[in-house]
Image 1 (cartoon, rainbow, N blue to C red):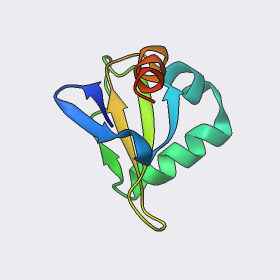
Image 2 (image 1 turned 90 degrees about the vertical axis):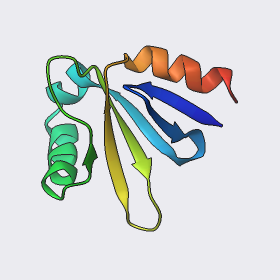
Image 3 (image 1 turned 60 degrees about the horizontal axis):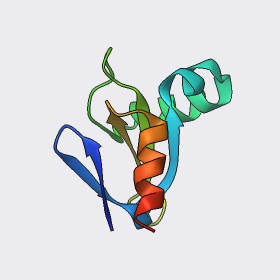
Image 4 (image 1 turned 180 degrees about the vertical axis):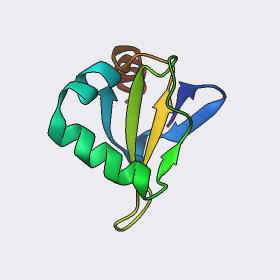
Length: 85
């Protein structure tokens, strides 16, 4: 199934590793270190701005992870994901 993550972006649900709430992720040093590493590697899709509410970690194959930004809350994305299982 496909999950709409906002801004005309869609991802395959089977590729989702994790969905992070932006505020919670930024409050954790370890999570931010992990996300910052992916951002530094250029593995981010979308912009981080005042509209960003969540991050979606996606597997793009062996040792290839991407982080998508979304203007939709993590709770809503999780509910959408669960409805399609």
